Every structure is written in structure tokens, then in C-alpha cells.
Image 1: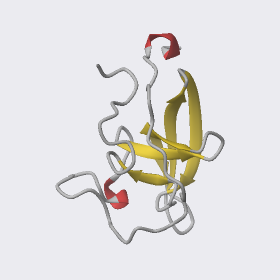
Image 2: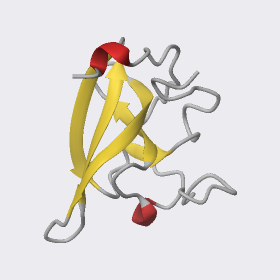
Image 3: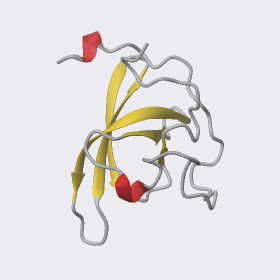
Image 4: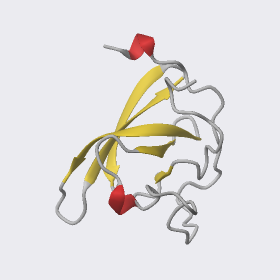
Length: 109
């Protein structure tokens, strides 16, 4: 496991209502802002209901689902790896920078 070599994510963005829809399809100027473009290796944001915070996350797998793809993402909470699978358009996934602007994903300095 390379979890020991990954740095912690540090401070994280908070978002009070993860289910609220903003009406926006992504961050302006971001080529990867549309959830339909996310694929294995894409960097996104994932919301952790346990901690009540957003974290930079990496899409580890995209599997076709009955009606929409299921994305499995990996993110770190206090240097502990967490994995979560959810539908591509789940409101608990967001384009990188929407809630964690200025925070680098783990392992980036």
C-alpha cells in the first residue's frame, strides 16, 4: 500500500447542505467540470457525511450502471484512505475547486 507515502489533505472546505443543487454545471473554465467527463484518474471533490466536509478525491473506477455510471472515489481524511461509490450525478460529488478551492489533493505540494 502506498498510503504511507501520501500526505494528508490539510484543511478542507465545508459545505452546509450537500444535497442542495446550485444550478451550476461546474467551475467556469474547468475542462473537467462536467460529471459526464469524469473517468478513472479524474480529480473531483467528494463529500463525507461523517466529517461534514468536502475532500479532493480521485476517481478510481467508473462502472456502467442500469441508468447511470457508478463512480468509486478515493479520498483521505486525516491521512486515512476512504473509498466511496456513488452515482455519477450524486450531489455529494463536485468538480475540483467548487468547495475546496486552494486545497491541493493529497500527495501534491
